[in-house]
Amino acid sequence: MGLLKASIKLSSKWPVYYATCMAKFSQARWRDYAIQSKGQTMNSRLIFQLGLLSAAACLSSVPLRAADAPHKFIVTDSSAARAQLPFSDAVQAGDTLYVSGTLGIDPATSQVATDPKAEAKLVLDAVKHTVEASGYQFEDLVFVQVYCTNLELYGLFNDVYRTYFHEHFPTRAFIGVNQLVRGAHFEVMATAVKSTRAH
Image (tube, rainbow, N blue to C red):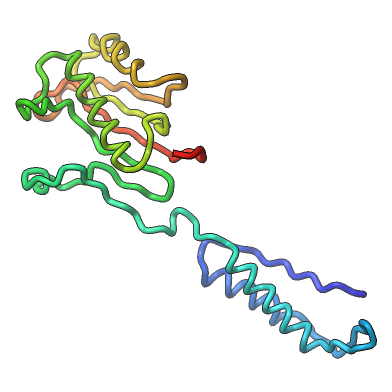
């Protein structure tokens, strides 16, 4: 018995999925023939209909790509003062979380900590809070970017930084700059990708 094989190339958009499948089937040259099976005849019209059903099943089983899913904009502070700032704390696109530049603000004073070691801890705590509030874990970080106004603080920052990870470290950049907003020594931004393990 001859088997009809149709190659369906799937792309990232549903209209393209549908158009591709329909083009493959509409371009096929159907001829009248019969397949004998248990004494009954199955004509080419029925085969064509079965082919369309198979194509529909194929399309329904393909999930939308992460890039096609709506972005989720995350703000962890609902205060009126925070609402005036023109950026989100993080944006989730698919399985990837992008965390905005974060400062080490002392909650007791609402100012950047004056002690660099305390500031380093506060800024990493703030990044961790945003990551976890977004449904991720700190171990999901894949890239961290640190801006620092004094490169002599590199070792001090590393001493604090390494206490936040249990085994593997994400990739990282440590960049010297002349000045940061609010007189901060550090500003940290990060990217996380949700792992396949259960959270």
